[in-house]
Image (cartoon, rainbow, N blue to C red; front, side, top):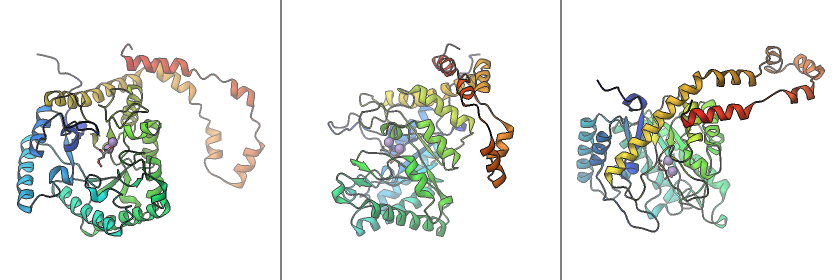
Length: 392
Ligand code: GCO
Ligand code: MN
Ligand code: MN
């Protein structure tokens, strides 16, 4: 009997794609689509053919075009539901398109126009209902147009207040309608606006505590977005995990100093990708792992399937390397050496009192000796690299 490939994904891995990711037609600012548009049910079938996919996510208008009539909408929903049933795919997350239509050219929740802001909230209320109709538990907010192209045009303090007003209203709606959604805020520094408000995940981690229902709201950090801002994605995700706010995660890749590439996960920054998978594994992240990327513009749909398979396969390969790293005796030995705990000190600085402050002030630290303690990080990093490169 053939041995089972250890990198084959299953639904238990909770890998998800979006109607807009595998359904991406390859249009860019310079060129027309290179792939024909597939309807939502066909995209679900395609993911079924890929195999091992847990779910498919959508923006309201990925499923139902903004101008669809009620009867068209019903037909699309019926076909989509049938495709979900046939393939066993779930819809774990839904979101609102608040960026494509010209009405949102100056933002949605932060538009200077009160009517546009109200319309954006109304559109989101309807889209939340649509998501829940298909079983969504997580609702993502990505504010691609919430920003400016010139600082002359918008008051950034006012913009935060408008955004908070919208979030508070929608949290209450979620409660009132018993939709049971968890909100996940997704930051991005730029594209499509020159400057987007809440440019990095850390901005949202600070903002959440100012909401009326902070417990309902977390973050959806995206690999590429933090790389665009020059940040270290595993560190960003670490901060979200520690705050208990990692509700969702968008996996892809991005080279610094480029346009928004949405590359296949792990295809460029495989060292960061490895430490991300390690973090999610070590801290037992159990939410969906969403591949928010798309195939090269040169791909046809056969190649798009390879792109989807490759995304999941790379994750599984990195997972197996994480297990190697965590079991590697030389690596673990070095890690034990460099993390120098001190029980007495933990008791002292772990909780402030006048007595512990006095005791700390009276302590005598040998600065030179401390500075001379070895930190064999070159050795450790090379061992990590050899695990990643597959020779250990
Ligand atoms: C982007 C974003 C989007 C969001 C999506 C879900 O750069 O375009 O990553 O793909 O994730 O709108 O909210
Ligand atoms: Mn993105
Ligand atoms: Mn995203």
